[in-house]
Length: 265
Figure 1 (cartoon, rainbow, N blue to C red):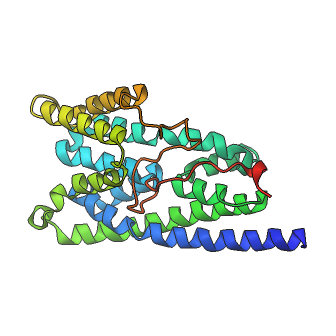
Figure 2: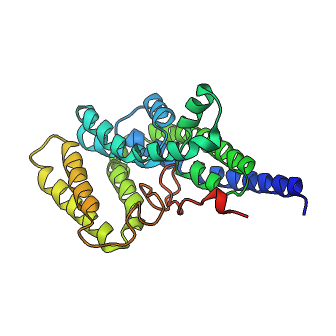
Figure 3: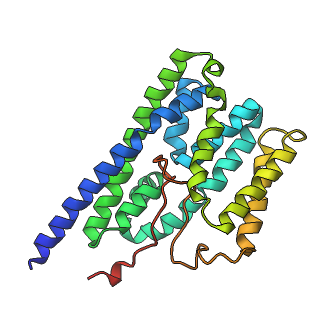
């Protein structure tokens, strides 16, 4: 078997997967753009948010908090989004050997280090295919997601009076949709229920957005101590969790366990 031919085939396969993931993920940007406008952002604010933050779970969390408390809840919205985006630090550490290069390249890679680009990259066998999968997926999702976000924001802006269509509550519903596929084990269910109860009880007496942060602390405590003895805790299976489910938005897909490139044939 010709090693060069095999490597070329793997790169070609990585390209096909990357473009498929990018196209599928980008379609959900329309929904985010419309929901962001419904939450009170204007078109340009929505586009800047999508370009700068660029991680689906964090973006939905941000607009969910803003929808409940307006601009007064901005600090809490930023904090909530940051909590969800913290996992990208672990992704970046894992991807550094794959990306390589000098700091400008590393800086660019940081912006497109999301669940999808990491998953596609680490699913490949050869170093060249892994690098191709990472960059094509990351750039493809970034361009597509921001384009469809603009389209969705323009649609939401044209509709106006989003409360008439029920879109004023859609941001919270969309974020719930991110979490729902993860509620399959006792540990995850316990974390979700505990956080929901705390947030519900504190909502009438605290500034919008703060109950979310308090609930996040409770969720971290329950999850960290593994009170329910779930065997699939992060760090025990060799994988890293994602923030959401199968909604398709960037940063919300379920990642497989990290493959070991050296273990591949």
